[in-house]
Image 1 (cartoon, rainbow, N blue to C red):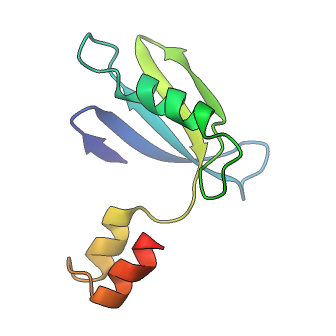
Image 2 (image 1 turned 60 degrees about the vertical axis):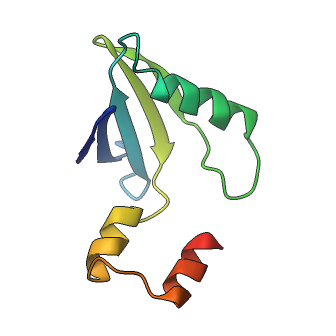
Amino acid sequence: MQHGLLGTVFRASNLANANHQLVVKVGHTGLNHHSLEHEHRVLSLLHGVYGIPQLLWFGLESGHNVLVLPSLGPSLEDVFNVCGQTFSPSMTAVIAD
């Protein structure tokens, strides 16, 4: 779980297929907190583009916006921490690619 200014990101498993790892983003629905709605619109527009995760579900749950995506691997923050909180030029090139 990672907390951010605009919400929280959870790692989850699909109950039907435990090997299918998911990311669940939960955000506020207040007037200034439309980032998940915007992410939903952008992902919908980019549907089918190579390298863009497939949107699995977006909706309102218990007064919060919820976005569900497949997990593409460790977060950039996780990789940054494993690398001693510094990226070499070659690692930066790999991330950019």
